[in-house]
Image 1 (cartoon, each protein chain N blue to C red):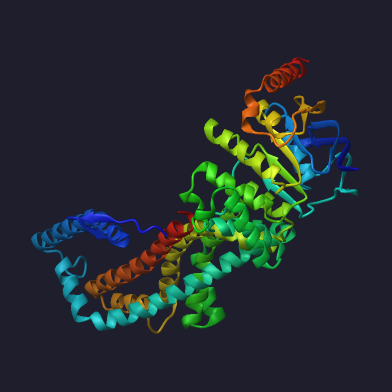
Image 2 (cartoon, helix red, strand yellow; image 1 turned 60 degrees about the horizontal axis):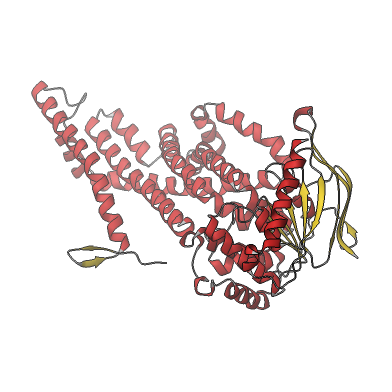
Length: 269
Length: 255
């Protein structure tokens, strides 16, 4: 690897630092916009004196957040750990199914159309079914989230496998590589960027899946917390929970996005 | 003894019931150790013929014999080069060269010696640890030559390998290939090009092909002795042969 460097005031800085600066630069504008919106909401809520149940001022949400921070973070962490698990399983399932489709034309022709049909069913409506099948605990949330989110990874993997240059595949055939060898040596690495594109979509679907599962039936987790707070009309607490969930979700998404950048840089230059 | 022999080769593509004949009654013989070029216009079916020799293209009709056996599928002992170097971007230069050995699952160490030697002979010894995106187009195609030769293939198949390169790099690549050939690092070669000068400089014989449905209309022996040097291209006889080939190609295209 070439250690490309740029300099600040004549001092060479490592490459990751330039990335960090670019990131900070990119984050500045949306962050500024959000701050302006929050300020506007604060002013609106105070001047119009809206009842807090309907529309709590951002400062009230912040207070709720601070005073309930340990509880909210506990539930959010529970939810996010399930999101991460669901994402990992979705990744494995998506890649495995795409691999089977690639290795066997017969299976591909038999099942690939079915998977498309499955996508058309509004899967959110299936959430209660998963509770019946897997009980009210974490397992039903996890399986529901996986069911909801593996498809983008499957689609990404298939697109990536298809995209592999025809010449590279021809080279493998000329060398009498097996289908599995072609897949492992050429198609799978080629598909990684597409896989990450799918994984980014899947991340958001995983969050939806787990929280929805918790809405339907749970004893803990941020979805459960929101349902409880709603029952008590604690609007500020709901919003505080959403803020924490968003931050956690952003973190997971950020890790996936960073993984994509690393893979693109490392593997494709 | 003929090494590669085509008898009445025919290729028909059938996209949506509308048959297109890409190759029509192609007959040829290539002796062991010969460097043969196929000259013809773009899209005339030259590549189809090459892919048949690699075992990658089904033969609609006729017989293709390679080393005394009818061709039915990839033989595994061919080296192949495309117009695009098709290097794997995540592998280093040396790993790209070793790729055929990895696929063949042979012990790597003896092959590694040959890979080092090949890279040295194309002047890329210092770049073994680099990755393809750090190299120029010509360098990448040189890596691709090494990869094609690393398994010591009995046939080297090249599908317009230099046509995406600029003219200067292309000339350098011709000299390099001539060099490799004369060091006997490659054995029997089939080379597809639409550059007449390239074909004359490199080949022992040249097949001229017509447009679709393509067939071999001429079999021209290149009379220059080996080892050849790049200065050959300034020779009067060389240029006379190029002119002769050019008029031959033009004639075959009119009809």
